[in-house]
Image (tube, rainbow, N blue to C red; front, side, top):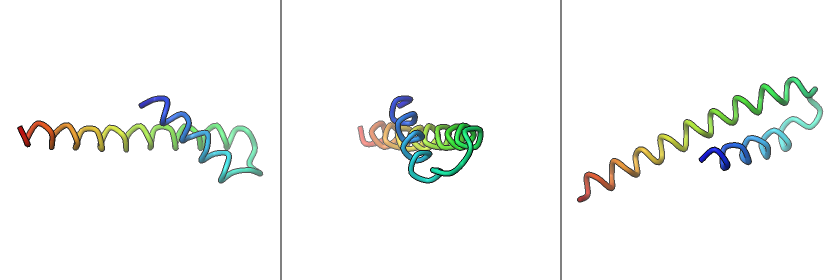
Length: 55
């Protein structure tokens, strides 16, 4: 999960902020990273809930 969030954060920062200073890129990476972690936790939590309730 952390690997996907890290790779996603790097890809999004490189694509969207090519002319930003390095400090702005670092902050944006942190926001994107934690956003992707939260999104993955929600998705995996829902999948786990649905798998448990189906049994």
